[in-house]
Length: 504
Image (tube, rainbow, N blue to C red; front, side):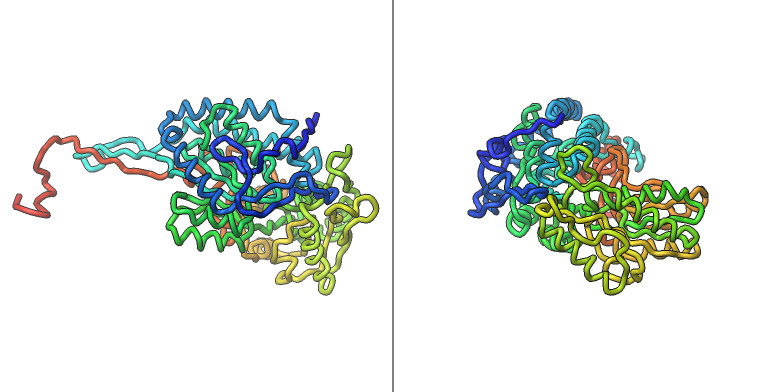
């Protein structure tokens, strides 16, 4: 059961969370959190500026020695308590996530919130598993071993499409490894990130280990990336903004992790289970109203199945129920804002000059007209080099193109700048094994599209960025290795000294 709460009262003190306390931002500007289903503001707050970022970074720096000095077991215990606090608040998180994003209730209840809380439980256990190379006498005269140490203060920036999940992906591996964090969520959707950080403090994680600055990218975001006391930046967002983040991070020579845009191909071979592929394509294209960097956006269907696939997808899309996020039976909610809805519509309108809109392609009328809704949309007849095939639309839009030979389908799948995720559909294990090997993407699903699990990494190839979220592999982003080499001979004169002075 969703537990609704008064958002304005909950965050009356402000939408910045530094050293365990909520407070207002000091930028002098305000921002509304808007319910995209109605267009109404649910919270107005003061945005963070550079001064707020500086205060949060210093709070994280003060908390670092205690947290980094804790044993892995102590950090693990604290994170298990965090997971317990979160589970008690499940209903509040479900409500807040659907309210600020327009997600259907069932998506928040069954995907976003439980998946995020599972991440906490995973990293609570993983905090005790930070392996290094076994100690050994590699030189014969020394024992060598590797220490894996935290980097320091991490500055993370998360997007608006999965606010809670992205906050978890950024914060959890960092703090499990002994770092402290300053997270900047999207200024459009800060609610669950703030609640997530509050729950950490309530669980006994020291004040200052997790801090939230709710501000715009040009102000708070750039101040965070460029801050000299931030040891590493982790950013999830568009490739265009990722380039700017990389420029700023390079100027301070800090480590950088980028999870950027995607344009996931959905490759259907002629022996695929057609019903499974049709259902997988609709679910994979429409999850979170298509506002997912791994969403199925380009379906390449081998010609014998092409017509039936298009027909099946169009029929199923027409049956998808758009509605108010908290209404029973709603399948698809609004996009995050009217401005973003108009951006998505622009892609489709421009495509009409060179392609066919089979179904959808417009905003609904009636009661839904006040929200940022857009109908599930299927496009065919677009050329491979067209805008709608090559660029990230980030809405409920799927394009379908035919192919003939298997190698042509793989080549088309690889023919965009992106490489975040993909799927291949076939009953032939040799075909799917070949696709998994040859598609250039950080995740390749076989006969499915979208599922993620805490134990496996998420990250891209090419313009989709580098580095990994989730899984033990993410510790590579948030730790540094130190080689310790200890003499075991106790001899004051070493044989190698003669290469500098004296004779043997």
